[in-house]
Length: 119
Image: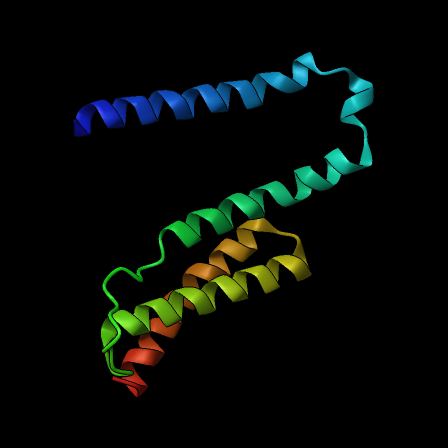
């Protein structure tokens, strides 16, 4: 079951990637130059990154009896803080790579801070 799911998921991702890469060649140039499509093109990388981060949040191990000193809560708070910082930095700089580097540094730094001072 797991191997067939992985094969299907890989083929689906390959198909979506191929379609999105081939589609601009099939669409008339006049439609490609519309302002709304340019705005969509600017926000798409950030949207994908935010969706990936949201799906990777580690909230599954947190129960209603979690204490402020628990590592699971520290990780979730660090992830949410890093996501907010990534959105803020991207809004200012419009540089996806800079936002990703800040996010990676922020998640590690915030996790260390929370573990050091709250745990």
